[in-house]
Length: 171
Ligand SMILES: Cc1cc2nc3c(=O)[nH]c(=O)nc-3n(C[C@H](O)[C@H](O)[C@H](O)COP(=O)(O)O)c2cc1C
Image (tube, rainbow, N blue to C red; front, top):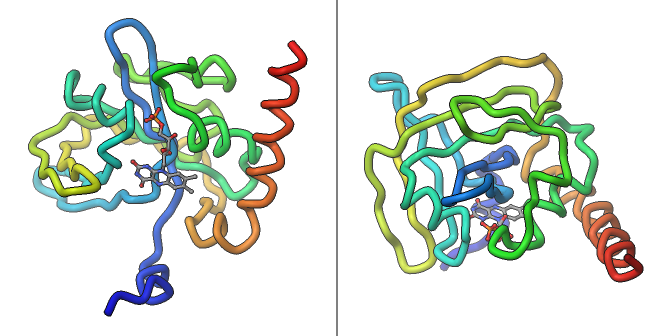
C-alpha cells in the first residue's frame, strides 16, 4: 500500500526549472529535486514525460534551477506550473537573467545551472542526474516548500492563474 500522506512527509522545495529549445527559453515548476552527490557535485531532477521542458533538456542536456522564496508572487508558480512552454513564452512574464546561457529568476534565493550526466526513464517520469556547473547564493531567506504549496499557497496560485487568463481573454 502506498499512502501519499506518508510520501508528503519527505520534504521538498519548489523551483523554477529553466532550459532552452531551439529558439527561446522554456521552463516549468518542479519539486522533485535533490542534491545527489558531492563528487562530482550533482543533483537529481525528475520531470514528467509530458513536459515540454523535459524534451528540451533531452535535446540540449542543460538546465537551470531557481530556488523560490516563501514570499514569491503566486503568479510565478501559476505561470510555470499551470501551462506548457510549448504554446507560451513563460519567461516573458517574469524578470530573469541568463546564467551560462540559461534563464534564471532575478528574485530567486539561489540560481543553479547543471549539465546532464545520465537519465533514467520511468513510465511517468524521467530522472536526470546532472553535474552542477554553477551555484549562486543570491540572498538568505526562507525557501518555499512543496508542503507550503499544499497547505496554504495553492489557492492563491489558482486565483492568480484565473486572473491572468481573464486578462488575456480581455486582450
Ligand atoms: C506545485 C507543483 C509541483 C510540480 N512538480 C513537478 C515536478 O517535480 N516535475 C515535473 O516535471 N513537473 C512538475 N510540475 C508540473 C509542471 O510544472 C507542469 O506540468 C508544467 O506545465 C510543465 O510545463 P512545460 O510543458 O512547459 O514543461 C509541478 C507543478 C506544480 C504546480
